[in-house]
Every structure is written in structure tokens, then in C-alpha cells.
Length: 353
Image (cartoon, rainbow, N blue to C red; front, side, top):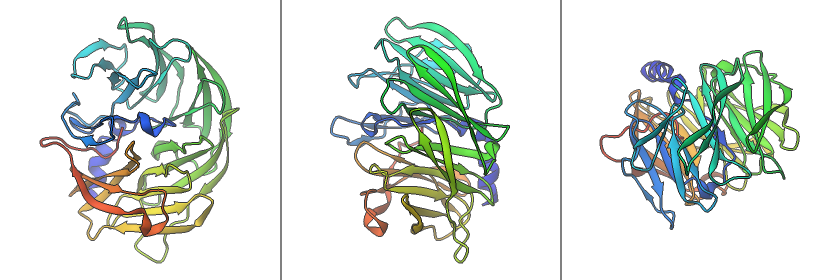
């Protein structure tokens, strides 16, 4: 338990990454941990080849052309092709979070948003010519350890949403190659320096954020994807009579947005399902039987299942659990332990990409 907290803290700045309201069908290639990867083919069958160039804990963002063809992957400081060849170095130091979205007007261009040293940078990259159209341009300082991106409700652009050290949320609107400052929103339960995971639901009108600490918690917000404002913050209820639910880490919404799954990742850790419309309706789907194997992260996959990674004795493992029908309530969601194993000599890391 202590080893895991120490180990996680040591790699916190490397592990934290951006989440985006990306269609689940586009999540075909996952690169995370130490050389770990998952690929989903045209029939959404997963394979676990070593197509990740990182020998240290990191998570890579994947970029796709509009027809679904894989374009490149990036860890923020460099761009790689599918065979792990470094094709372009970006003018940035070590990145703690990165996300890529398509340019709204040109299929050859991609916008790369990178979190490095508490600052957010915007880069424009031409995939076809392998040319950096715009070098990394810093547009926001004093950012916490994570950020998220959400599609505008009807326009072609995306909102970049980040927690600031001043205990506020700040949004920026990205469309084409232009990024403009949006709205500031209150953060009533403010701990941006411990906000390890931020994600939106698939509709784009909810944001959930996990605060990783012994007295940590998950906060659910309404999000106005027309004007980039967060409101109606609510702490998710936690167990007071059972084994404590502490150190919340991974979280994700079911494809229907009806449920929110949270991994409480310490000691006898818990996988908990919350009903978004009534958070008092929550259920422990699975609890670990000892403090050696905890839950870490959860991510919805294109095969319709939710994937969960685990760690053993403070070290991320190769074990992948699944929730087979995440839109179903309670135990009907079909939780299955050890459904997959990552490739040999890889290490899954504490968080998915």
C-alpha cells in the first residue's frame, strides 16, 4: 500500500495525461506504461503487440485521419509512426500530458495540446509533409497535473479545460489553427495539484475529476459545451461504513452516460459504479481481497467493454480486467478478472492513454 503510493508519486508527472471526448470507435490504439500497447482491429478484437517505444512510464496520444486511418502517435516531445520510428522532434521538454485533435479544415493538419512544466502548449503539425506548421506556443500557465478536451456541442472545435493553481477552471476554444481564451469557472472543492484524472462523458455535458489522496474524492460537474463553463459541482458519496474508499484514480463514463465507474486505488481497493442521475445509487462491483492488487485506471474500448488495469505490490502489472456490459446496472455489468494479459516484458503503468 505504502509502496504503491510512493511509486505512483514518483512517476505522477509522467503518468498524468489528457482525456478527450473522443468517439469510442476511434480508440483503436492504446500506448501506455512501459512499452505496453493494445490494438483493436476492424472487428474490434484486441491484440497486445509491443508497438510502444517508451521504456519509461508514459502515455501516448494517437492521431487518426478522418477516414479512421492511423496517422501518428506522440508523447508530446516527439512524433512517432506505427513502427516506433521517431519522425519529428518537437521543441518541448518532458510532457506530463498530451492530446491530439484533427484540424477542422485540413485533413493533413493536427492540433497537439501538451502539458509540460505546468504550462499548456499548442502545436500545429502537418502529417503528410512531416512539418511543424506552428512550433509549440504556450497559451496557459499555472495548470495542475491534468487537463481534458471536449468537443463543442455543434461547431467543429474543441474546448481545452484545465484546473489552475488559483483553484479555478479555465477553458480555451480550439478551432482550425486558432485557440482563444474562454471562460473561468469556480472550483469549490479545490485541489488542482492532486487532480490526477479528468474526463468527460460521451455527450460532452458532464466532467468528472478524481483527487488522488487519502481523503480524496471524485467531483462531478455540469459542462456547457456551447460556452465552456463548468457548474453544479457535486462530490460523489463515499463509503463510511465499509472499507474506506480512498485514493480515487481512474474513472470513466459508460457509453450510455448513465453510469460513472470509479477505481478507488489503495489498500482493499474498490471498483464502484455510480448512477449519474442519482449518485446515492452506487454499488461496489468488485473489491480486492488484499492490499497487494489494486485497481488503477478504466477506459471504455471500441469492443463495447470497459478495460481496467491493475498493479501488484506497488508495481503496475500486465493484468487487464474487463466490464463486459458497462451500460448494465450493478453486477449485471459483467465484471471479469484477468480477461487479458499484456505482452511479455511490458508493464501496464497506472493509467491508460
